[in-house]
Image 1 (cartoon, rainbow, N blue to C red):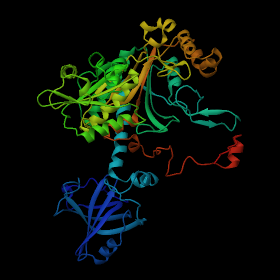
Image 2 (spheres, rainbow, N blue to C red; image 1 turned 180 degrees about the vertical axis):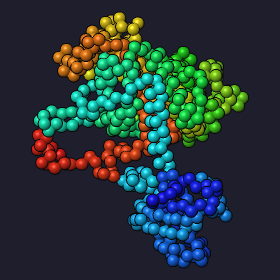
Image 3 (cartoon, one colour; image 1 turned 45 degrees about the vertical axis):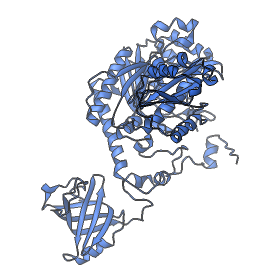
Image 4 (cartoon, rainbow, N blue to C red; image 1 turned 30 degrees about the vertical axis):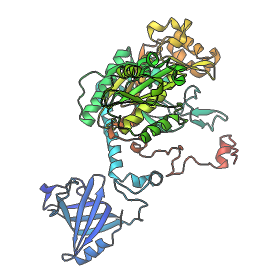
Length: 585
């Protein structure tokens, strides 16, 4: 046996026990006639002791060990004289009587420690070494535990796990597909699934009633902190349900995860907010409610006093940052520069401090009397020491989104986004369609199979832009962790939906005929939801990027720098696939 125990489970109760351990050398240090080695495996670290006076040859062998050597040791567990409270094994050490070097190792390009000296690019290139760090390993252990608890919960709720195909038909609606050429069908292509949407609906037509799958999905889109080209969904669908049934089931799953993973027992129902209110008061369909700073509209108060920026605006709104009147001019200028960045797009920022005596001191004092400024203060319910920040613009929705970015930045600066605090809500009543000025057509806000709210169906003929979707997103701490909808199960309503989205009958039949035809054989009312497993894990682990909870992620350019992918392929392979690639420099 290579080992009888692991490096993380020896305790003071094991004193006197002779054990064999195996693992990697974390570090060595020589102190007088003693050599100490920290031995690491997946389970923890154990301190090894080599005594020159007891066995000089063995001690000399230990002194030649390098970082990340793979070794096997046998020895006796004893109590440490200098205990380490930061290690679970910190009360004991192993007095070594036998050492076997199983493999030598090159010096790693960065330290295998939580506070490593390796940058992101270097760690991604040597990801197999990065995964040895305990902080990264714990993220993957958390991911495993969450997947286990998901399966446990859904199994008890009667869900059946079913695998769906990975090579499917391309559907240009939505994000870009990754496509796969078919050698046996020259000139034709598969696509990798953006989600198993149509297949899980077909499973409902098949009578499977409750389906789930922890499934890889693929989207060829620009990356950011919460996106990867391949990601993992907890994909679910249910038959004979309405929106409330789905929400109750998956709110229950969220509470189960909070309790089993984080030890947080949430009793009260999650808050619900319409999409309209989320955009009006927070400028985002995924508002972070760990803190306040709800938008206040100021059109009635601030217009008509000669300040042309406000007088000509279609929207004036602001936030109140509690206790932030201490912001310096330099800090306020930095906020102004932030909102004027091309990514945000505001023209400027107006601020007002509430002084200790209750008076208001603003950057536009020359246009407004103290009486008007006091009305503004009352609209925010602001107190002495508070700071009011105001944006305006020609487009109300655009300006609200700019104000949302400002709100998040200020909250970060004030330390209001505590990663150990969780604010959960459902955002409901999304618009069914969004209008594209560029293409002069409607697009589905979610996907073309989302059902309109029953009471809004007549509006499909008269005012499609006003139709609300029977859809719902779960948002936690400003992150959309899941979303879904009740699906269209009536083939005639689905036909109407396709027409409103600009599909010809031929194109709809070509892309989705298999689903529409299936509905003709008796489709039950059904709906579902997909959670982002990567986002759930990063949320519970307090990470800033989902990349840190994926074993082998891509970088921000969509590359795997460890294996150097994507990469060119041989001409012979291209010929077999009937492809010719002309890469221009």
